[in-house]
Amino acid sequence: MPPTVATSSTIVQPIKALVHAPPGHSKTFSSLTLSDKCPADFTHQDKKVAVQRTPPVLLDDLLWLSFDSAATIGMKQVGLDVPAVDLSGILTLTFEQDLNAVGKIVEAQIAKLGPRRRLKVVLDTISALDGMAENFQQRLRGLGGYDLWRAVKKNHADFYGVLRPLACDLYYLSHSKAVSESTGTDAVSAQQRRVKEAAGLAGIVPSISGSSLQLYRGEATFIFTIEKQPIPAPQGGGSAYFFRAEDTGNVEVKRRLKLLNEKGETQMVVPADWRVVRKMAGLA
Image (cartoon, rainbow, N blue to C red; front, side, top):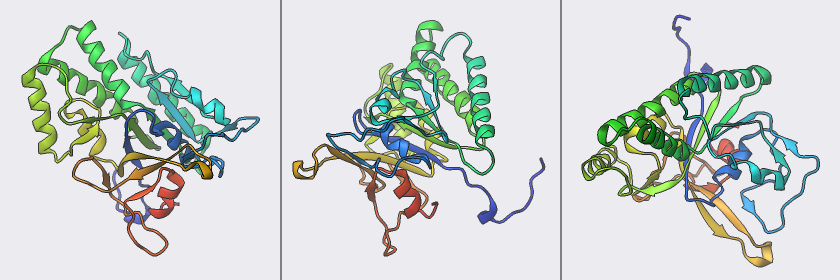
């Protein structure tokens, strides 16, 4: 289809978000709030007594692309269910064919929802894909040094390229690491750090190797990290989770849209609930 002129308000703007945090910081569970069918009583607070839902609520406008075969197992305990694709074994000798199959699965889910509803695709986690790609290139192809990292980046680019043009929103989950953490030879490690520092990345970044991170952060609407805070026992105990959008100089974050409260004031730390984020960003 040839390009045509339109106003920015009439163009469907896909959301691409990158959320990174240490393990146990609700990257997966907070992403459930992306669904239009997520129950109102499922919030950013993980209290000691979980809400039971029978039968489970199917969040059919989500699609989980899981690089960890156990990534969605905890959802059963809170009575939530999502369409999911297990990609924990995707990096085989049929890698390219597997990638194309993933694209077709996403397209089928988009068609199933119809034009009035928007599919939200969650990749859980890109860090696991990174490790799988490194293992694949290193052990099965025998690559090392710069050749290894170039091949890993190509794996990321191939996967990103399959999903990027599709009519859906993309949410990339990642573990966090310090910029200084890297693998490979000393020369390669130093080069990776220079690339990240030159790109303006802060001290704590998504755990994605080399310059592959640029694929995901370049078009991101949001890059959030997640903070965990205890809930006092009189209020039910457990933990509460918050998205941080403020650049502290130590954590890599980003936002293209301001998060505004009811008074029009910009908020840098908000509940880790995408319903809250959409409302504050004017996307609801």
